[in-house]
Image 1: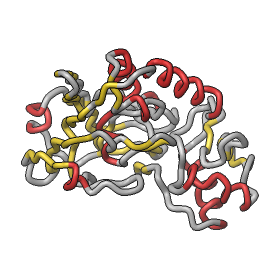
Image 2: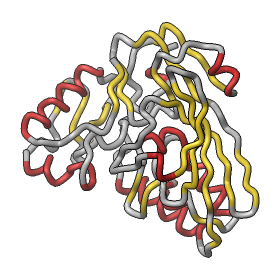
Image 3: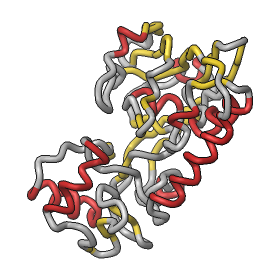
Image 4: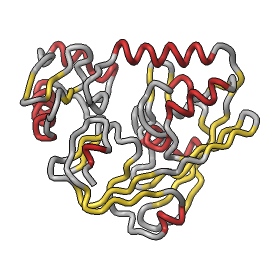
Length: 258
């Protein structure tokens, strides 16, 4: 399985083993040592590839009144649209973030209007080592800035307490339009660095905007994005990442698969 075809970066070698997970039973049947793949965003895969990938496709979606139970593999953008049409806020404000519910929870993904955890009640997750399932309350999730307590766990599903609101389709459309207008169109994995707007101002001050390495470039539009202009390699991207870090104290947000 060529991982460049499974990631937003369009970069990455093969996975020697590739498991598609559609149920908890599927997870229980395999060894859980491996990389967890959702929508393929927020990651950079080695040019050599990796040994094992576990692709999460837990796509349950059950809305009862204002209470939403949703699987980890469900796309955040799609969940935002469905709930917006129902007149319920809780996910619309983060619907511009590419990725799945599970991936967003693991990194406590956020945008200018808030984070994935704002309306969250609980998360069901599977421990990688013991294979025990635990229901985490919001307080137990350890949410911080782009972090959570789930790095040794596989998120299975989450419960959100939605709230009735007006004009949500208009808000959803504005968010999608803004993303198309303000963010680069070349393949990328999103913001490479933590901090305000991914450290854009810091990168500009370091005079790294528009820097090239092979077919990878530091985006002139949004400098915390390093773009694949066509056939860029993981090595080229990481060279630019290191050059930025050598001039700044920015901490990585994107996960590198080696």
